[in-house]
Length: 295
Image 1 (tube, rainbow, N blue to C red):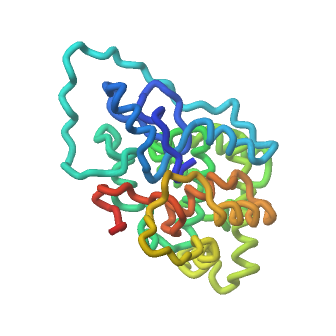
Image 2 (image 1 turned 120 degrees about the horizontal axis):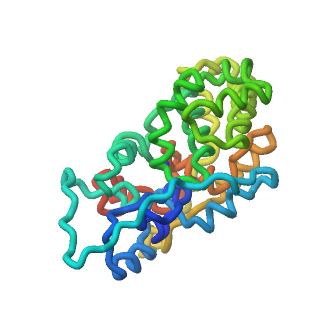
């Protein structure tokens, strides 16, 4: 989840600032010191808007200039410090640490970056692929609020049905009348990706093409786990800074593009791999997050 994977910047803390991939606004009143500290924090999901803009242009035709995150009114800072928001007492990754975004917190707590993967089914992994593409240039919170609309419009992410029934500009326009992200290129990409997804499964996993099969696309993603490297004695195993792409996400992006997929740039794929639970170099859940599996 805002593309999503490790894309974080100080801008995510300012509600009035358009944010990218998984950048999520935090409380409105933050001090300059807090903002400066956040810029250097290693976190698990968001990145800078600059990275997103570059990523969105990975495919020459994928221009997102017409897409912008919903504007929010900037609150005037009061003279007296605001009372902290009441949460559940759990410490989360910074992009999901604001109780004003319960859907985001639930996604972080229940789905995002499980070491063994939250859900291995083809249907879920296709859903995540479409939502990650839809989120380019927007906040992940915005996409989560539209998730049910996507499930209804896309027949619970039945890629077989999408590939066989959504083929024309009229189909594209019909989808744009629903409450999904209203971007023609993203909608067109989702139809193209459904067809490419079916073809990939039929070619590589012909006995695992069903919506609820768990050894299809999940097995395909195993080829893009980070390579294990023997660490030197005394070497710090934690990365120096958070990443927004990796050698594995580069390969996945290139391989999917060759198969005809759209909106699958490396930064998007890095976020996708992390969200799905495919281990990558870079911070996963922030140290201190109650879901961190780093010891």
